[in-house]
Length: 500
Image (tube, rainbow, N blue to C red; front, side, top):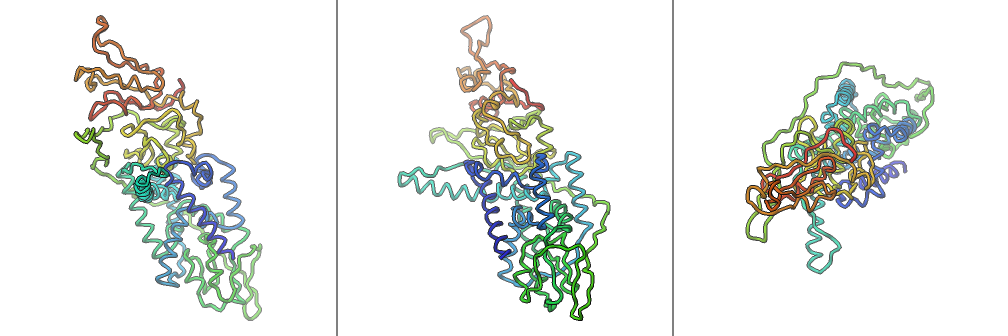
C-alpha cells in the first residue's frame, strides 16, 4: 500500500514539474509553480526557510521521501529503472557506499557555490539537471507535437492551437543536457540510483539526515529466510540481506522491498533508540548500523566544458517570398543583460541554478542560456527574435531560486536593465540616406527621438538620439531595427539595475 501511494504521488509531481518546462504559455505556473519552489537547492538559494525546514523535517520523519517523490530527476531514474526491470528482474545486489566520492562531490558543490562557480554546481544539481533535459530535449518534441495539432486544426478552421517557433537556443547547453540525459539513462538502466547515491549533493545531505529518521524500513530476522529478494530489487543497492542491514543514508524510501518480501520480514516502522533483532535461538543482538566516518579531502574535479564554434541555428525569414532577409547577429555586449527583477549581475549569478525554467516560459523568445564560460547555462537576454515587453513578468513569476525576484508590471516599466547605444555606421538613415525612425516609433517609454542630423539644417535627414536616463533596456529598438546583420542600435547591459 505504501509503495502504491509513493508511486501515485511521484507520478503526479513528476508529470506536473515536467509540464512546467513544456508549457510555453506559462498557464500551469499559476497553479503548480510551487512545485518548483519546493525543490531543495532553489529553496536554499532563495533563502526560503519555510521550505527548507519542511524538507528537513520530512526527511527526519520519513527518510529520503524527497528523492523518491518530489525530485524530478530521482523519479526519472526510477522510470528508467522500472522499464529496464521489465527486461531483467532481480538484477540488483548490495554494494558498499562509496562515501569518499559522495562527500567529495558535496564538498566540490559547496566550494563551487561559495566561490561563485555556479556553472560547476549547476552541472550536478538534480533539479537543474532535469530542468535542462526537459527544456532542451523534451520541450522541442512537445512543441513539434503542438505545431502538428495546430496545422491540422487550421485545416478545419479551428484555432484551439497555435504554432510556436522551435529553435536551438544554445548549442553548449544542449550538448550538456544531452550528455547528462545519456549518462543518467545508462546509469539508471544498469544500476538504478547510482547517481543519487554517489554524485548528487542533495542526496548526500538528505542521506545524512535520513540516518536519524523516525520511520524507516526494518528487517525482522525472526521472519527473514535469507532469500535476498529484497536486496536484488533494491535500486539503491543499500540492503545487505546477509547481515540483515539497511544503509539508511542511501535508502530513498521507495518501499519496493516491502512489496517484494514474501515473508513480510521488512516493515516500515518507527525507529527505536536501541533497536534489536531476535535470532531464531531467541537471543538479542544489537542491530548493526553502518558507521560513516568518511571525512576525506575532496577530489580535484574535471569540469565538463562544452565548446563549439557552430553558429546558433535560427530560422530564415523571408520578405514576401521573394528575397531572404539576412538574419541578425548578436552584438558584442560589454555587459550581459540580466532579466528585470534580478537586481544585479552578481545577485543573478549567485542565485541562478541554470534550470532553464524562465527560458521555457519566456513568451517573447528573449531569454536564452549563456555560452560564456563564466556564466555557462545561466539565462541572458538577447533581442534577435523579440524584445522584453514592459507588461510581461513571466520570468519573475516562475523563478524558484530568487535569482529573479517577483515584480509587478509597474515595477517592470521602471527598472533599467540597460541602455540603448546608437551605432552611426550601421544606421540606414546614414548608409542608405532613407527615412526610418523605427526605433523611435516603437520605444515603449519614449526614450528615443528623431532629430536632424545637421543641427543647422532642420530639413536634413533625421537620426535617432537616445535618452539613456529614460531608457529601460527592453530591446524593442534593437529587435525592430531593419539594419542587417547588426542592428544600428543595441542594448548595453547594466551590472547593477537602476530605477528610472
